[in-house]
Length: 364
Image (tube, rainbow, N blue to C red; front, side, top):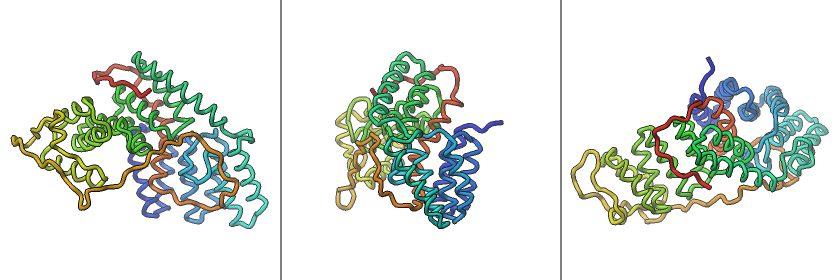
């Protein structure tokens, strides 16, 4: 029996852990398992090839990269392979490294020239012009929004998936896909897309609200509290306050303290007295006390402010990209899994739209 896409999540986490620990042999095995679940997805092969390169298994890496080039070209964030905005571009860069190490300079130069053509849009396998991509993504998102408003969740998800295939770094699309999957009760997949939204756009309140909503559906109330507090801090309104109140009776005083501490460590200082003034209820699950710590401070009272990744349009890559292998960082792998999951999610989605979950507005 075919495995479900929910089973990808622990495998992806496992692969990421192995990469972080530089256990590349174990990473190869894990990417192989992922590839077996979704054999039509190029990402597991590109990831496995990179792990092979770290192990100096160049022939195995070459075989995987050639398979990637036989698959359709798709967009990837350039944080995965510096200077590469598509799967084929990254594969050619990896191949160039292999040829350099085997002293086949002409083959390496040919790979780099092809990669340059792909990035410049002059190769048959080049992705569409970035402006056309942005226009098409906007159209697909608008159509998906209309379908969502009509409760046509499967069709809306299909439109968001198509848009994500073209723009996998779009936080709004991930948030919208999350909302679709919540309505379809695909909570594990919804969790993935919500996490992507917060990763890609960390100071966007709606992303944290979506993530909190998924955790609430999964009864992860402490995690939900953290997300709702974060969302309210970024953009205080009655919706986030209601969300905070909806989970407070499900968390203990210890959970409350942990959430405040985690937020403080992340640079977000929560003033409880201000929350109470805005309408937050005081009672917790295990306490009848109306007294709570009103502020949890870090030693200096200041924390890092996340930057907004405002540039989502594909830019031209430099022609002078070095031929080297970049280790798969945890962050890059997490982002790139968006490409992998987005293509698999709707294949296994529930085919009926029955749901008792309250529907929230989709992001325009």
